[in-house]
Image (tube, rainbow, N blue to C red; front, side, top):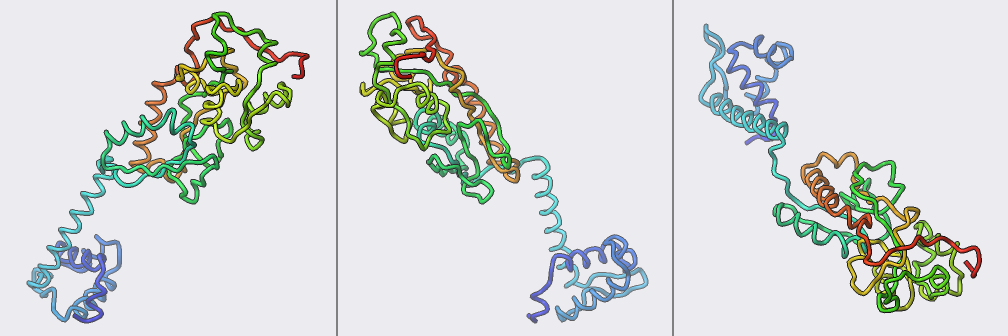
Amino acid sequence: MTPAAKALAWDDFRLIKAIAEERALPAAAHALGINHSTVFRRLGQIEEALGVKLFERHRSGYVATPAGEEMVLLAGRVDEDITAFTRKLAGQEIKPAGELRVATNDTLLVDLLTPLFSKFLAQCPDIRLDILVGNRAANLSKRDADVAIRATDSPPETLVGRKPARIAWALYGRAEDFPGPEPASENDLWQCPWVSLGEQFTMMSAVRYIARHVAAERVVYKLNTVLGLAEAVEAGIGIGFLPCFIGDARPGLKRLAPPDPRLAADLWILTHPDMRHTPRVRLFLDFIATEIARLKPQIEGERRPPAAEAEMEPSQSGGV
């Protein structure tokens, strides 16, 4: 095979197919949207490259030789495959498959998302999840991840997504330290030891609240993970604010005050605009948004604790 023959392109097959169907160069040129001289020249180049004649000129028009017929048949099969592929795209018939990279943090993963991911994989066995855990925002524009699930009131303007719930926060303490049915007095709460996230989380309302209202010497334990915060409260190190979907799920914890709307944060499922129509991304967004919506009462702290709850307001004295 000559080097020129190896360079045959799909347009060459389309040209031969058009000549065979139209049986005349002007008609083939019209069908392809090019001029007559171009068709004549390209036919000569293709025949020269292959070293065989593809058509015989008869009174009835151009008739394909055996070699030409083979080329026309191949062109027809390729054209049918392309048409079928286009129909599948238009009808969204392509089955979602492949790897999906999801960025989130450890708190959402452990206490909320892992059962949802398990359910998703059971329903979509051709998709594989690669979970990226961390508090630093993934750069979806650079494809660090395909989807990000974050608690934030200020999602990046460069991303698109859905907000299926708002995460409620409330004050919790160890249940055995607050055994009575009556809520602890406001003054007693301010005098308790407190636990809090560290200064690197000052973007969070709960951290700013404690910094403004709780005396510094009362904050006896700081750390950089909400999971650890819940463990610290359950261990009796101090009282502290937690997302309700974490605090309410732990029998060893007790709500000491109702959820504070000022501490809540939106839960977002985000992706890059260029990715939102990808079948596996679209399927994942739909699925997770629906599942989170089902859990909205727990996430938004709508369950009522056994004992009556009293609204806790910042004191004007007592070091807060």
